[in-house]
Image 1: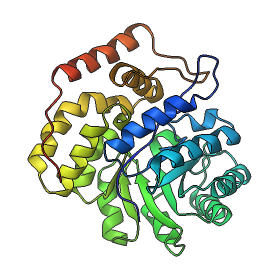
Image 2: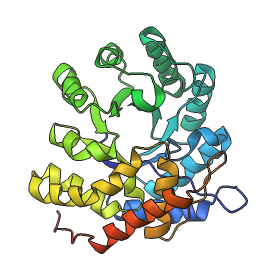
Image 3: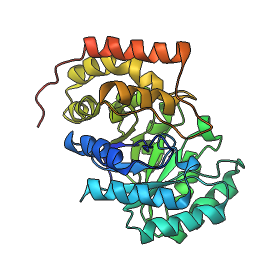
Image 4: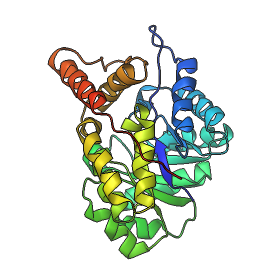
Amino acid sequence: MWQGVIPAVTSKFHADGSLDFPEMERCFQLQMDAGCDGLIACGSLGEGPMLSHEERVAVLKTAKQISGSKPAILTVAEASTRDACALARKAAEAGADGLMVVPSTIYHTDHRETVANLRAIAAAGDLPIMIYSNRVAYRVDVTTDILEELADDPRFVAVKESSDDIRRSTEIINRLGSRYDVFTGVDNLAFEALAVGAVGWVAGLVVAFPKETVAIYKLMQAKRYDEALAIYRWFRPLLDLDVSSYLVQNLKLVEALVIDSNDRVRAPRMPLAGEQRARVEALVRQALAKRPTLPTLA
């Protein structure tokens, strides 16, 4: 159902902390102009847990305005099943094309609880769902066994595989074939995941480098692996910034430096400073100095 590069976009703020919708429209449009295949709003990178439900719905509507016929997906990542279901219903009412769902982010559910949580959210929203499996950040592992158990509900259409174990993508495909659209959710494992059969990439650094991200994906789909790998190797130092407790600050600073946006974040986060900031700035300077010429793509 879903495939390609779907950016996990950042949420933009004015200096007073309110949402900056014109800047989001501009940044989201850059993604679509580069050939991305949809938008995911209010995920980890989009600071979803720092936004109210009303703010998240407003960001979703902005994403949908820009994505047009391509999917605009809202992230549901709530501590309680009750609140997750409420947000899922609001997303459906607001015109979301689907949901990306994280199991409980505070209480770390076991197998039985994870299945019940995800089924309840699916029923509440009645929308296509990408299951976000990220045992590293959220400590709930949506295993292949769980995916198999959920496969009887057609609303579960995709999985964002972020276990940090590249073997998991192959395990899912071997066990379940094409039942789920497998997306990689780890920027610095994207080449590897696409090489073993992932059909999509929920990308982070794409927010600043959309053309390079789309080029890697399209080259992999065309089996032009050497060309894709050359871009990926150039990109890797920046992609590593996505795998960090400071991923939001890292990537917003990259956006500020590359696409002339800003690095405002919602407290308690604060923009990078000191050595952390200098390191990211140096990585961006080095990348821009050697930015590759992209090949012709269909």
